[in-house]
Length: 158
Image 1 (tube, rainbow, N blue to C red):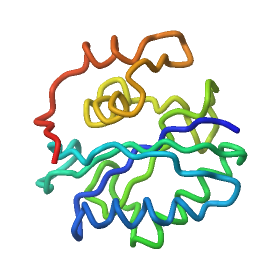
Image 2: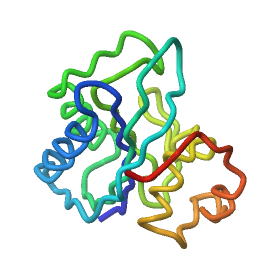
Image 3: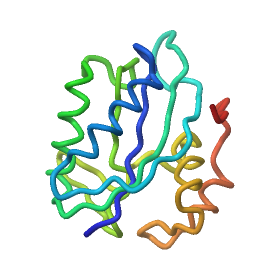
Image 4: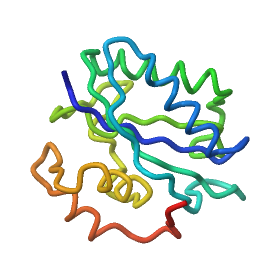
């Protein structure tokens, strides 16, 4: 089993409900156990144009799936939620990102783990720290160090 952390985000069509529904659907991923989820957080959007604020969370799970198989399962959930991939960092109904996959470091055409921009995003680091405050990144960097260096982004717990 690999302990994984998944970032959840939405800023369209009742974002909090989108995240709750996604968590329920994550429970059905084969060979995977959803362990916990952080509180929900509101954050300012990062991306083009005027967008509503996001609702974000981080979930922890254990899986026997290969990383790209887990990615496929998460993207299937996004698709069921009406996810459209038309504009990079645009508004979305649901975004599910693999933040960490055990202690692995991956860089394939489809997947980078650890997530390449998570150290810049307090809406990822704060909820991750709520679940695993003593976590160390695969490169040996303590999560708390990343959190202390992360710029603020109008983040608050809902």
